[in-house]
Image 1 (tube, rainbow, N blue to C red):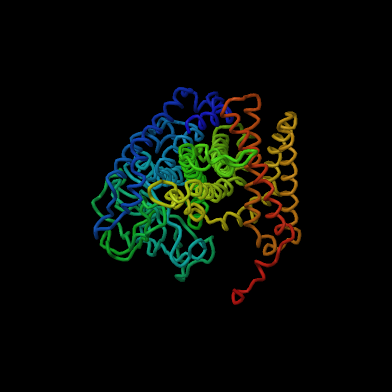
Image 2 (cartoon, rainbow, N blue to C red):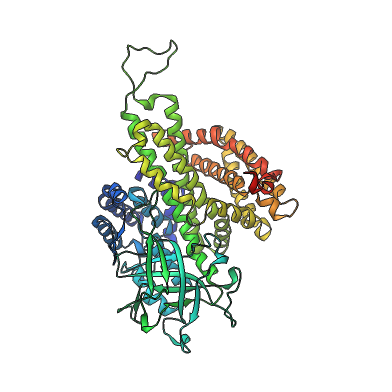
Length: 604
């Protein structure tokens, strides 16, 4: 994997050019390599050996606290001590000022070794949100302690009755007394409600857990404002702290209502939390103490800062599970002797069996996995590179990066979630019956990966966001800019005889996608356009990945080593077997197929 990461970072994305920028001037190729080496070592020593352990020894509640295996505690400690929680932060607050591209690549090692143990995605996202939207005191007391690993963080959005429909959340926040605005940690409220599917919502890994909670502030008549405009965001610590970040010894009114038992990701606690049920009474009163972040009614806008970051993180996790399964099945295929090759005269039973990697159908399944997983990693690191442009590029480059990220974030989350899951399914198939047993890791990779199409916005939510908002916002500016990037790659590839054919295929695919987008909105009726948003998402993702593969292939156009030959083979596979699928997906989109809208519940 390291050779793949180095190729993408240095040969393709040219991260070395970031060293010319003031923020990264103290770094070098050597410091980037040292970070990757450290993370690879910790992942190999503290994560990978315990991936099966945390899958079989699920978190349990003993009535007072959640019990996790010692290996999880050791992994968290090693991760926090590595400095990766503050990798991208300023030197002034103890950070490394790493490019996000390098940070994402380094974190990929942990996701591959054991996504179930988890690393710092939610904690870092939580702290980054507070750095962007919190007060100076909130940054100092909460965010900096998260970056150090002393505190950890969550995001509390969904509720049992609302699910993905955040406009229907019922958790309410009331001002905590007449002087509620005078608290140095921010306007103080008391929250009451229930939150569901909270990853890392209860544990003993850190001194404190900082919950970021969406809730509504009732109006003067005690009613909740309907829709998302009434949502506000609050910091709700598990344990109360003073203005110096020291624990006061008082437990906040946040109680564990239950642990969810999952198909995968079993090593990470997933919880139902009750806020303000009265089990704990901080200050002698019921209600969880929460500190307002930003302004009332702007909670969802603030939370999107963390949600979009988490979506790229989920896409990367899905990618690494796909890559882990690919490597495991490739290793198995190289060692497993079975069957004999078909030659011009048929099979010769007198010959010894060959490794299954020599069979064409097994090669097909391995090529599919390679094209999905390695292509997805390129996509995720490309998006990470856009984040660096957004924060440190010129004004024009930052503006383009912002627009491209708007369009690509739904793809970065959804495409690996679907197709690296398919890669895991193919890994099981390569192993045959053994793949379906717990003697080999590929069945766990599939179970772990199945969550990624659901959390941080389901496939359907991403599809609605893409077709309903991202490709039409600002007159379609994002889609036009992305198409321009693709056309640049097509033009460069067109000058290479070996790449001219896929370049023409991609040009046709881009044209199909643009025509389908226009046709979907031809009537201007959202119900008609969005009924087939998911096949649109699938087609859009495949066009993006076809572009990524063509761009990568240009880098190795003059090379003939095994890495270059593998990249060209993956490109050939994707263009021969995958890209043609977009016609079937875009057909219903372009004709605004009415069946999904017209189907009645009683007909099922």
